[in-house]
Image (cartoon, rainbow, N blue to C red; front, side, top):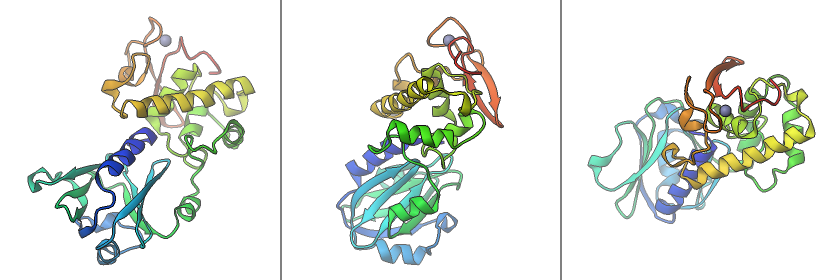
Length: 265
Ligand SMILES: [Zn+2]
């Protein structure tokens, strides 16, 4: 499932491909992914306009349409974007296809139709309406905001990190990475974290996500100290000679190193 680093890479991709070009047509092949707008209305609102800015909050991407609001994209379990010219390169599971004046197309490619598309007037209103917590890479997200957010949530730490109303953008994979880099056990209770542990965690969130983005959210390019590529039962811990173990926390399967993640648990 695309998480914050993937979304940041999608944002950069849009910035490099799809901005400031007039939209000439919009095809919606799976109208069920549209929310609060019909295919026809989306077509008429976008046609003749250009995307002028991009913004990301958690796992949502916002594209400002000059004079016509903001297109909002959520990628569900497996969505991604493809910019292409040759029709033969169109992804099989294209749900939304936007064509530009230069003859190129932007496809929202999404095998399982679990993501969504909206057209809204105000991204902040949308974010508030979805009750999304702060984005951990926003400049306003400081330690105190983080501490308040995490202490609002009772129970185990891993599901707290994945709760989009607490912090927006972290899912199953990056919560494992963040906890591994912080040396904190996934079952640690949020109420048991002292200021020192919270600081380590806060820094690990920032560092893990930024490092992933720096490497294009591509596990093949990740540094050796990352857990993600060894994230399987019996995988070799990147930090010690131990083995990675599988663990169920509040119904979600995670991976961790029992030797290296000694804090809490
Ligand atoms: Zn280890």
